[in-house]
Image (cartoon, rainbow, N blue to C red):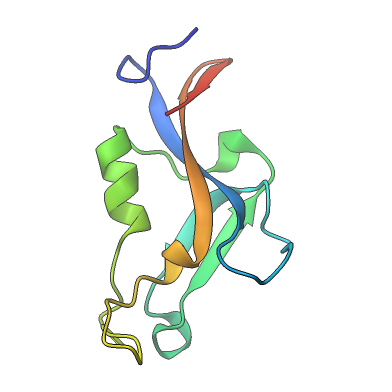
Length: 104
């Protein structure tokens, strides 16, 4: 079993869309890219079913920071809270080293 803090890279897997929206085409896929400022701050995520093609981070903390990025175009939502487009998804952070992987 791969240690969560050991060697390797961290990738982000979308579990589902947060809230009562039902299944989405991104469910179960890996984040390849995300522009939090696309579409006037609504954001755009590019996904892949292949973990090898997912965006790689050196640490879990770096992946969490990427996930929580706030839009510069529309920094606040209508309710006054930070606009973090990627957080509309429930995700898991996966630590990979070669063929081994572990959820963290």
